[in-house]
Length: 232
Image 1: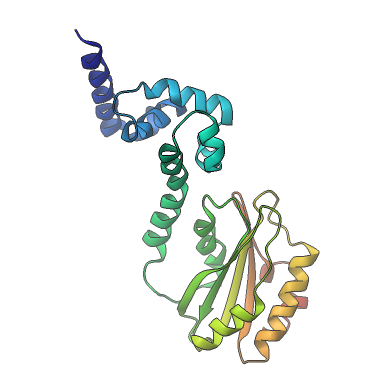
Image 2: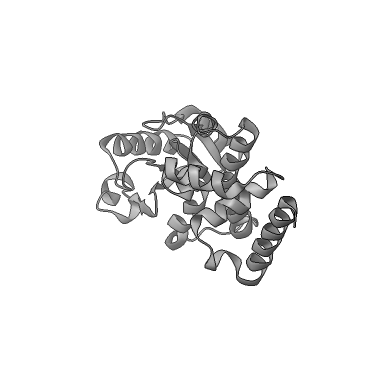
């Protein structure tokens, strides 16, 4: 029996196993091995998967690693870009599945609303959500991306978008990629500044959400609410 026949047979068995059980019965290296089938038609991707996991420590670390770091591990740039795309695809899928229809935004679900938007993001990113007078979503998008440490809040851009969409309410959200979901002094200062600036053009800032890993915090639900959102 030829080596290529054994190779194809193994891949077919893995695919059939996946179709029967999903990834529930798979080990991490087997999941990564299958992802790499789309990149390598002849090579043993099991060995590559083991090497990547040994170097980066986990599937999530592999998928979130910078492209240049993946290339240095021995894979091609095309394969590195492919792996790097997967967290972004997950975020787009989750966001589209759950938030595809413009709808009324209920405050009790605001943390869940934003959580999916930060899947796979390793740089600090700021989202702006704008609502009409009935608190229905009219715009949501990234207004700034920074480094792994900080990101400047683009006050003017937020004001311009709020006016362009004739918004009544605004909510911002940002992530702490390497920290915890607790507001910093800078977060509090920026929230106060943005709230007063938006108020001057008739738009009410009603919340600021911070996301970190599996945690998220609504500043409106903290002790800071009376200071930041007084009169809401």
